[in-house]
Image 1 (tube, rainbow, N blue to C red):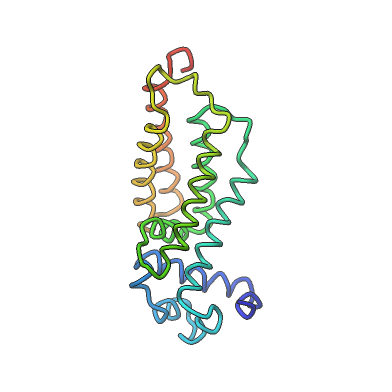
Image 2 (cartoon, rainbow, N blue to C red):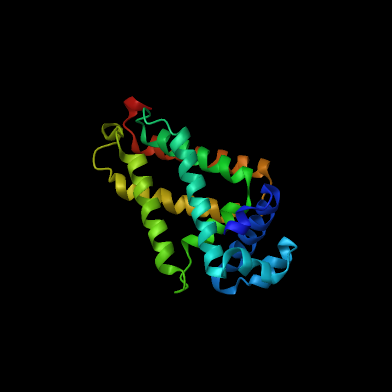
Length: 205
C-alpha cells in the first residue's frame, strides 16, 4: 500500500475508479486483476505490487467508500432535525452528493451489499453491520415518533423504504449522468412526501 499511496493523487484515483467499475460491474469473483489493470492502463503485475492481492484491493475500496460516506454524513448531518422523513431526505442528499462526485461508487457499493463470495463475505459483513447500526442511530435518535398515526410500525415502514431505496440505487448503477441522478432523487423525495402524507397525523402535514 505504501507504494500505491506514494503515487500522484490523479494516478491513485485513476486506478481506484477502474477497480470500482470492474468490481461494480462483475462482483468480486468474476472481476479479474487483468481487467482492472487494463482499464487502469497499467501492467497486471502492478495491482499485486500495489495491493498484494485482489482481495486486499477489494477491501481497500470498501473501506474508502464506506469511510467517505460516513465522513460526509458526520460533517453534514444536522442532529437537530427530528422529523423522520426530513432525516431520511438529508441522509439521501448527502449520499447522492458523494455519488455525483464519483459515480463509480454506487455500482461498487451496490455490488458489495449483495456480495456472497466466501473470500470476502466475513469482512463485508462487518462493514454492512456497522453501516446499518450507524444508519439506525442517525434516523431514530431524537426522531418525532408522535407525528405518526396510531398503529404505525416505524421499523416496518423503514424496511419498506429501504426496499424503495434499493430500487433507486439499482437504477443509479446504469451509468447515469448527474442531471439524471438529480431527477431520480426528486422522484424519490416525492415518494417520501407521499409516505409522509399517508403515515403522519394531519396536524403535522
